[in-house]
Length: 162
Image (cartoon, rainbow, N blue to C red; front, side, top):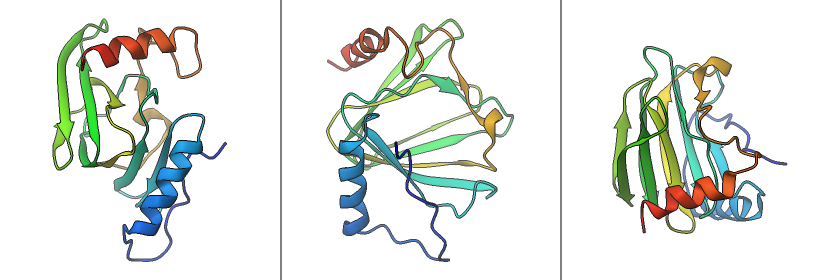
C-alpha cells in the first residue's frame, strides 16, 4: 500500500494541477483515504513540509508531538478540516472548523486530531524536523488506525462538526 509520494529531488518544488490531480486520485484509491506528498527533500531536513490530501472518512489517530520544539502549522488549501484538541485523558478541549485559506498553529505536546469535513481536503503541513520515530506519540485513549472501535470513534469526532 502506497502511503506517500516520493520526496522531491529537484531544488524547486512546484504544486501544480497535475500533481494535485494525481494526489487526489491516490487518496481516493488508498484504503487509508489519504495521501501524503512530501515537499522536503529528506527526513533529515530541519523543516518538514508536506501536502496531505484527505478524504472524508479517513482516520488519523489523535497524537501529539512530544519534543520541546515540535510546533506544527496546518493550512487548508482546499476543502474543510476539522481540528480537535484533547486533554491528557482524551476529553475534547477545543473544536475548530478550518475552511480553505484558514490555518491552525499548535505548540508542542498538544493532543490533537484532524478529519476531512469535505471530499478532497488538501492541507499544507509544516513542522520542525528532522523526522524520527520519537516525533509522534499516539494517544492510548483512542483506537489505533486498524483497531476495533475506529468507526465509532471517528463518528463521534464527526458529530462534533454536525
